[in-house]
Length: 364
Ligand SMILES: [Ca+2]
Image 1 (cartoon, rainbow, N blue to C red):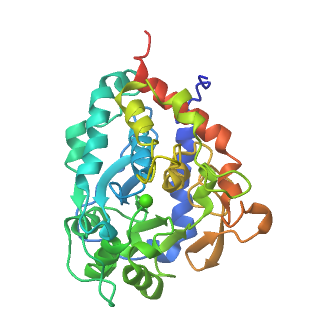
Image 2 (image 1 turned 90 degrees about the vertical axis):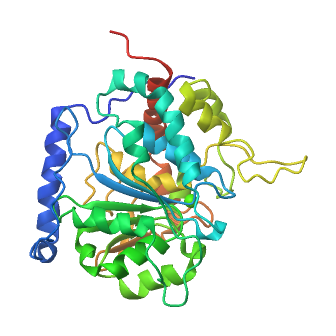
């Protein structure tokens, strides 16, 4: 099955809408806007060739661990790297014993092979060298009771990226692995909090002390969507079974450039535990809801409670949103999963069209 092409971020109406969003940000958080601008030189807003604002994104990931779904999420991210300003890719994988920047770099290498074809569809895809220059090793050990310890490459890069952000050109930090490097960054330079929006995906168990530090010291001061389970709606059925989608990758990714084949490979034996009898394959990419939140062409990112590709969240305190506990919006024990799953047809069709870009150059 080849999904229909869904135009993304291509029309002027959308450009105007995204420009309007900046105004909404300022209106929504006047206290933040009133804060003195940071002394560091600000990085200008990045625009696509059609004038659309690119959200600035720093992703931290545990790619390389026992669950291959972060590799899937990285493929997804890079296929949308023309509409996002990717300023950092950190390996926050303390549970693995060491960082795994090599896993991130392997996805960038697949992207490099396809970039020529991608550029015929959008001139905004960054070079692989540029992406490689933004890859950073993160914490390799669990944080002590305090929740922070020493700076890492990744924590320093978060501080640097946030210092060049501003309340009108925010840095979105998407945490797909542990919170250790973000926690360290906030500890080392508390002033960056005003420039950051965090969208996290239930990573408390990957570094409990770092997560507790964020909860105890930053909740209420940090704009934060704390999404533990909504992202399961990307792949889980309404029963809430942990059954990744086996059919979609073969139909839409395999044979679609290096990225398509890389994605397909990262859906095979998902947990690396095949014992000769039972194995798990399929599309999962549960952390990708944070990217979907930013790339939904119809979404205002200032409104976590609104409906949209990345899900709908419930205000649980100042600047803090969590998964909905409404039973009607749950898939089994996955609270809020339906708020993401309701948009699955749209965001997977769009993703399929992105794989088509990797497969074939645009005909002139
Ligand atoms: Ca992850």
